[in-house]
Length: 383
Image (tube, rainbow, N blue to C red; front, top):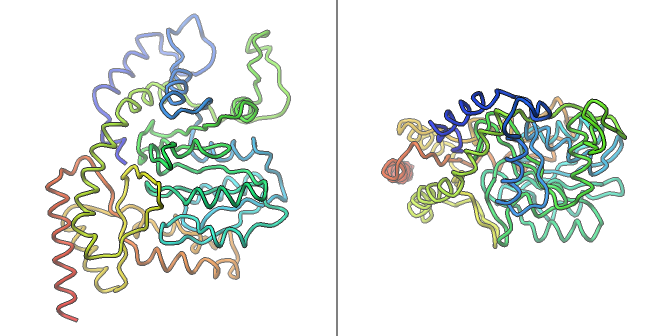
């Protein structure tokens, strides 16, 4: 969050201009009818902002993961390692490539545990997908060191931490390929949509062709006579999404600044009263979500009620845990495998994730924080 909160007259005006300028909604061709190629412009602006050589805009974050896996050469029989706290889309993309998802538990960063990662690597491991969940980086230094020692590629799933950083590099630009989501609940949004970022020209060329039915965009031929070398699929972004993306990109620094103000209010109130999520050294959050832990189930229930009574909700934890924890995916993993994810499930069951929202002002967050602490103290007094 909160890209959708900031959709306003600027996006509306941009969409109106798209129709005034010819109304071409397709990101390719129709040169005589259009004034701009908005998706291509959006890609260039993303590349410049995030300091990535190449960017490809696609139809969703899920599509971005699958396309990136294909570019990295994933095929049936390969193993791809990712983490137990995650959105199910990452697993779906691995399965859709015919590969086997291998799951690593998370630690108190709520991201991939490097120590367990080492134990999961086999000769079949071809890619590691660290997932930067809810605003915070994985322990990149440790994970990347392990991957490099085994000559394994890194695909950064950065759907939920857009504009976060690690050692001054934007998340999603550090691995071999990185991906963003632009769905309606993400940091910036195009409604649906995704981005693929890489500094590798060959990966980019593959992704660009694959997402467009295999089109190589050979400059010697018209689109209708274009060349191809392998079959692709259709994961293209529309011009409407592209023009919205350009407007949303302008708001990133404002979102970061305002998110941080709200996040720091909660942190200052709660840090001496609760155990907080661990933030990796050298990581800079995008302050999307504030997460703290509660061991007492009764206390947790009361605090969740306070959150609701203050007209706040939670983000994924606990309201959507079943879609974000592999322990609950018995349609994918067998019982023996699911037992191995118990550690992550237990940790997530102790967690409360407060979304940072710009439609809530600083006073709202102060009042909420005070009420949470007051409820905790009352509960402790009565036990």
